[in-house]
Length: 328
Image 1 (tube, rainbow, N blue to C red):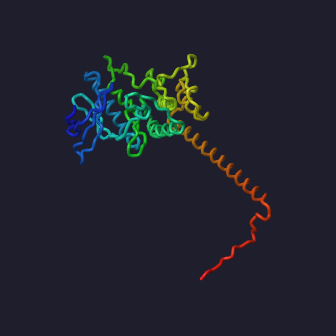
Image 2 (image 1 turned 135 degrees about the vertical axis):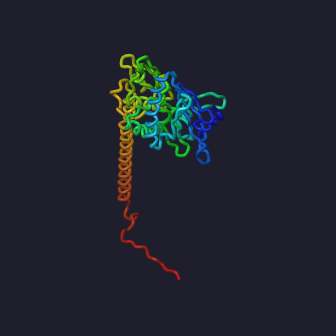
Image 3 (image 1 turned 30 degrees about the horizontal axis):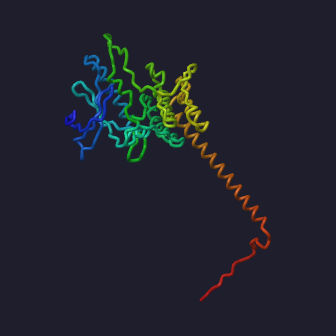
């Protein structure tokens, strides 16, 4: 593909990656000044049957409309174009200059040895809030991301903010399988083991499925343990993680609710989860303010008492007014 021009406009210059849904390329936009770089995603349906292609085409157009709407948020790539070429579908999106969070979860040493990075509580809290901000916008539009993980979260160079990429809903376009009655009978699973909750594995994702993924991401940041490595309680099927890290009880309760086994016991959407984090931060700030106020009061009382205990000859005379001596 390198060197080819798609749609008479997008000149492919670099291969970025490949997945079950197709391939991703970096391209120059020949129709704009300075030929800015854009990301081109190629989506391939598994069948070339005309009826399958028509369904894929309808899905593609629908999902493109959703991505175009979501691109209004500053932390979601804009959709610039979508088109069909030679029975293959293409999305053209904003190129985000930065790095994905995989680089922040693992450290690669000069000898190619890889170690896992443990985040402190405050940095993990900031990370999850930065993810939940744009995810709240996504959920308000009744869209499920379905594949939240470090490689799908970009840290933008220009401002350090987290940008959500690779929405899993679009990947369904390339996985449709049809029977003879023109009905979709099954789809290839969209998601990543460890970050994917039970209902999503069963093919019934909810908005709270994304909350589970964000919660597991938070646990990974705190403990250095990858999501698929956490054990589960054999009776309740809940994730066992509390023994691997020491954090505040309030934060522990929030994370515990995010990764509950049954979707109905989690926060229903990103907005509620974000509010819980903000409440914790505000409560912590108020507590710190009260502590500071008490400390100030103790210091003031102590200094006043010390002043009152001074002997009269060492105590300043409040009637004393310094004489100003003028020299000409």
